[in-house]
Length: 537
Image 1 (spheres, one colour):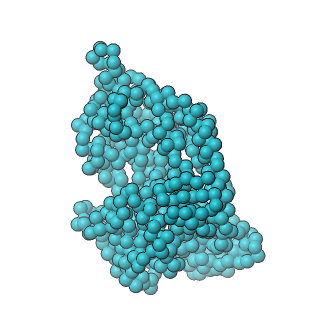
Image 2: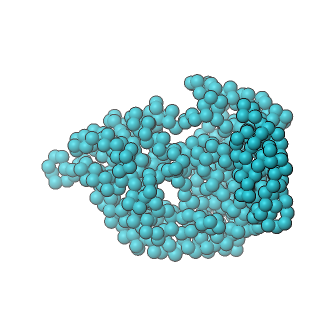
Image 3: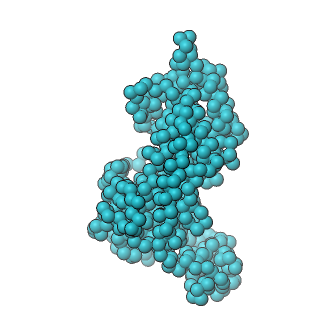
């Protein structure tokens, strides 16, 4: 069994013939190296830290100075007073591992701020597909403060860092793969990568540096918990990609306020329902039914309930009903959930909704016709991405009516609303040696830390404030989309050989026969997942 993913081919012979050959990175197809998640940690009095042993079971934790730092039988360290202590961890392999704990007073600075760290003038490029590569004059107080912060850290630690568009969006995955498989060069890159199945191949092939081995990174920091991408890229005890800061708001439901008012609907009722937890599939269906009507009496509807990219809605419908396509079990193995009751119910609902409210495109319509249809002002609802209504994008530039924006409604099996977290991936090439990778990660970590005085600054909400959003979307919807309790990421695109679009999403149309689509796809995916899981130990 082998299927092309760009130039990448994952084969049952555990080889990739065009661009990659599978190796055995830590946690995959090999016994994980036994190590602590931290070999040194600095805490303020009163703070806690969870010490973990990776690759073996910890059977004993002991502190050399309990007055400075106590440790529980489960590895929870509690900072008691200023000083140092060593935590010794005994594994079930009979070996011991040590972590140095430095405790400082509450009013002291902590973290990796040792001015003795000198990166030797190292130049680091965050390689993406959108940055201009040149300094831009600060446009507001935040940007001025950030520029000062960046100048300070680069001077303090003696390095230079900038973001530069080198790849384009389409070529980025293969640019990364080619770079690593060819041994890299004398540049120091952090690659920004788009979500793509070849990124799963890159992990399985050992092309991404194992970030869990770099003690300058602490994934318990708030900036990482705000998006959790590193969990998506955790295989065994190893972590292969990161992202810092708030997750970008993604799929929600736009509504044309005037179209709703013409149908006798108060647009604020939708926000109120979102707020009180009653914004659900049933309400969405009822509102679309009221909106869609024949206004000129010719027997044909001329105002429609819905327009959209069906793939985007199908993905969100599954998540909003507590469903999924692919998940991971406790052993880190991938699981096929396509036949779960929650997922099947979502697919059936989409086929029904598409038939009732989205079966009105012209026969020769292109895939993006729905933008034109939405801008016509004759549609009540649009399911799409949040960024489309921000300044400079399609909905912002080309609509002349007021829009609202809410979370995707809850399905019958849902516990709460769900926000899809689907951010760009940042990775360090595995062809770099340990010292070089550590220095790059240290600089990137400093570069992505919150700006002093702006700990909770959210660039996405700030952008929305100057865009085509009403106040309730900014105040209510966007914060919900970035709430850690509601955020959810998927593993769908991480699996080489599984093509979610052709296999499933592109098949879900008006009155689609879900059983006929799903049954052969389940068989195909099971074969792929069995093979991939055989690499994961």
